[in-house]
Image (cartoon, rainbow, N blue to C red; front, top):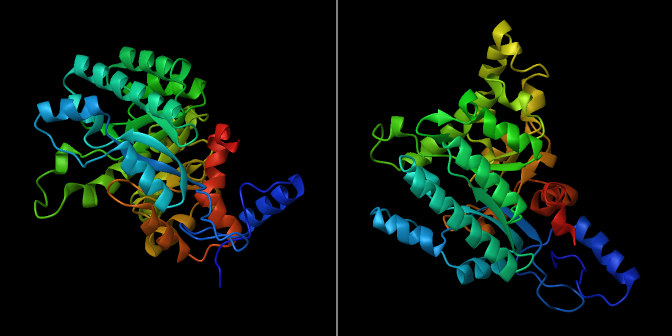
Length: 349
């Protein structure tokens, strides 16, 4: 049985076009599948919000610091996108990102600008295929505010890219509030990625620190935003958290107990669950059954975004995991594309 809907992008009449759109919304397209009518490959349609890139200048700077990172290229990305049915990916710096320049303000400013301009060039060179989450030279507040202005007003970035912590300081720390205030004013989409916390680097040397501490740092920063008031204070920020929210779903009852304390309630005037259900969560390395079921037990499908973690993971593995999740066609399409279109309406065309 052909798993693809009878959908062809270049249908000649408006009536057939609308019929095709209905079919697209009613069935899950699989990468590499073919339309029943034409036998041609289906057009990529997924939107990947968790895709890492490494601009040439960034790679050179890291080599000067004697740091290595996974290989990345524009053509490799485009090939992967086509294989995995991805129409658009949003770029964010590959590890170690801006953390590598945490003690070098000038270097941090330089790398943020270089990376953001390269991302903007990708968008110009490949219309519709790339989006940009701009880096900022945090924790330099003044420079970060200037880079936010440049990224949005000049480069037309789609959102801002923040690590979950910088030198041990979490995003909910009041020291970050001047940045969050500006992002709230702009109704910004803020994509977050877990940092490698220095506190835990030697606890388990026989396994990658990111296998455990990455998802945990995502949860730490979420809790800091919730219980230090940032989430409620800046309600117009659209937060995206990686890896299906880290370990947050599994620790929910502990946070609900904390919420009952009087001093906690002041930070969460609309309640813990209100804020958790406003956040967005990507599926990168959280696309397996256990993570998905735990996440969807506390938030609606409308808050789940397709993410791959490329080049560390590929989209076909993510899609295979999601296909086992028992989603109906409408929910699957919402995760693959529809939910992201609410955040990035420019892609609707």
